Amino acid sequence: MLTNFVVKDFDNVPTVSGGDINQPGFFADQYGDQNFLIEHFLLDTLDHGPLVKGTAVGGTVFNYGTIRYGIIRNVSGCIQLADLHATNVTTIQYVLCHDWVNWGISLDLTAGDNLRNVLIEYSTVADGSCPDANCGGPIYMGESMTGTNITIRNNILDWVNATHGHAIYGELYSGTVATSNYNGFYRAGNTLRWSHNGASYTTLTGVGSWNAATGQDANSTVLASDPFVNRAGSVFTVSVGHAAKTASSTGGEIGAYATAETIGPITQ
Image 1 (cartoon, rainbow, N blue to C red):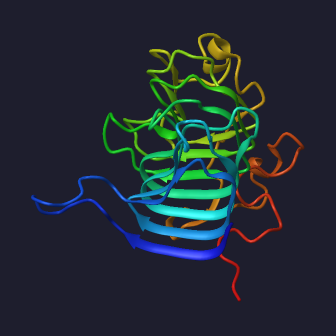
Image 2: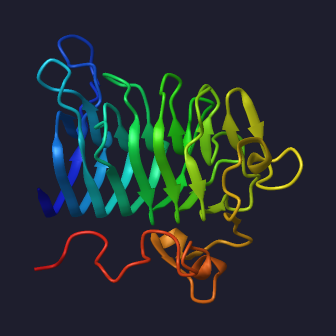
């Protein structure tokens, strides 16, 4: 268990040639990590957040656990998952991920596949920059994943670039789309997009839409206005009276702040 902590300014990308380890730095690089709990934290200005990467003991011990009540910001990607347990669920909840570059939460082939039994709920993925066509978006579903029992619900999924990125990116993924519903999508006034198996969609519902093609997000919402109190000041609580206050599966708030718990470290 890791609780009530701050990690800042970890960059493992080499700046000069010769002798450097040519890999990005991750807050955590987890193999066969079972029943882990990472909570009440701030990860700030890292290459990447947690990487739940592979199996241990000859490929027989798979990962599962919980990441909750945390803030991850100023990273290439916030959370990346692979090689998950056959029955136990890995949960990401009440996490704020903002000012990311390439993707927010990634379900991706890394050291292995076995992308299964994942619950992503009540989290906010916001202000991704998506500078080029290699950007995934708030949720990235990788090319080789064969995901089962993956649920994405009650989240706010947001990014800012007018050209690149998808709210849920599965452009190269041909498997079953994750079960996704009661999410709020926003793109700072730009066109929203979703993708799966080579096709891209620019409407949530209706003929030719993301929902019509995949059956997902029937009760999700395209938010008509910026949901956040002060985006420029990195205050990602939901504004009073905003539609995101009542958009969840229970009729309550969506996103990371739909809880009485402190998001981030608890001040001692």
